[in-house]
Image 1 (cartoon, helix red, strand yellow):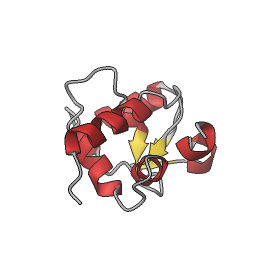
Image 2: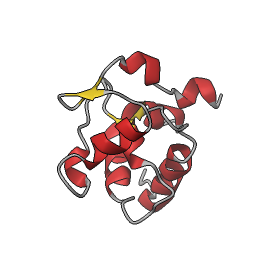
Image 3: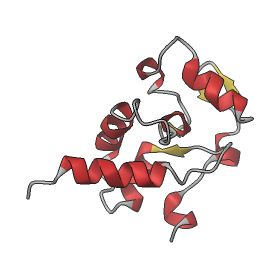
Length: 111
């Protein structure tokens, strides 16, 4: 069965817009919430495509261990980290410190 990527991407963006200020989620958590648990990479592609959408906080989406794997898609060398730190999220060596404290699970939070 072929999936409609543009529709999936739109759904990813709608979830990303709900991530609260100062919190983060993972590609896999968004995929699971959307009923596509094995599509974390596709969520990553959607986040990469969101850079001209200022209302989509792509900097709040990281990998399942809190690593800033998408940072190379942001302008400047540390923009993703700077955006997170401006929201009070501590990052050391491209890794969110106390990841569990900041993790927002759409599956649990949105039901």
